Length: 372
Image 1 (cartoon, rainbow, N blue to C red):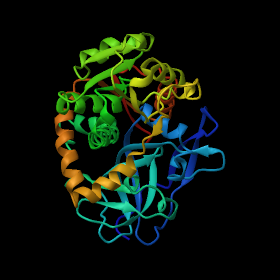
Image 2 (cartoon, rainbow, N blue to C red):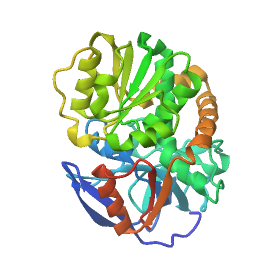
Image 3 (tube, rainbow, N blue to C red):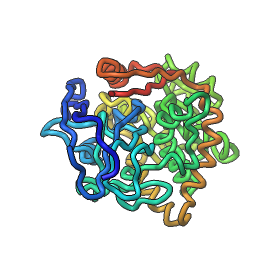
């Protein structure tokens, strides 16, 4: 086995599946010996955003809890971040390597490395074998065309953790709308317009589809000034101003998960609504509040399915190359949008988790955390 382990115990942040406000810490013994092709990773940092709350809210329905199993009734929320290889029992993975990918809110993770290439590897653990492959891939930063860890004294990693997984969804949504000719709509209406997924999609639509569609952002009254200042939206309305949105052929991309807001948009647009797409659940506590809605039934958008289809369409490396180009353009604009707050240790993780869960995280703030 390559490399010696210098830790004996890990730490997991657990949440109650049926009450996300209830959480606790769990100590976990790390293996003294690794099995065949197993790799021990130390999670150095991860971002915590409203997207991670969506993972928890949709944990049962979309199988997010299955990636990182916990004891009955409890779950480990998936996050995106960076980890370093502490010890490896795979001949092609060396201690000290840095990986980007999908981790639990934990200090460590043991994966079973497979399909190892210069670009990355896949966790082949049995519990992940039937889950969407896009979440099981870990990228080697040394060969990642989208990695910019040295930018602005390391701020490149912060931007990547905060935006990259969400921007992939934005990128795929932009392509999905284009492939479907915007469902014959002339406006795209984004709820939770200050969310990172909405901002990424708005940026792409505004930059590349301006002649094809108008981009309208709907957000809380407190966030309208911030959202409008970014220059990604043609219009910005508060949730109280839905009636002011022009009734033109429209698509709704709902990031908020607030049933009452979605119903208000449906009923306001009536026959002009061409398609309604459910993506996120940033207003997770109101997601059951929908009333009777006019127009088409909202459909859940599952990014991994579209990613798999486009991977076949574009061939080896095609998706990565297209994404890297869009990502570089986006990060050039997004670096100045938020202030990053770093937190280390259990208290910092708990405080930020409660803030994000309760919707009290300001839109111009990003959180990068470390448990260790």
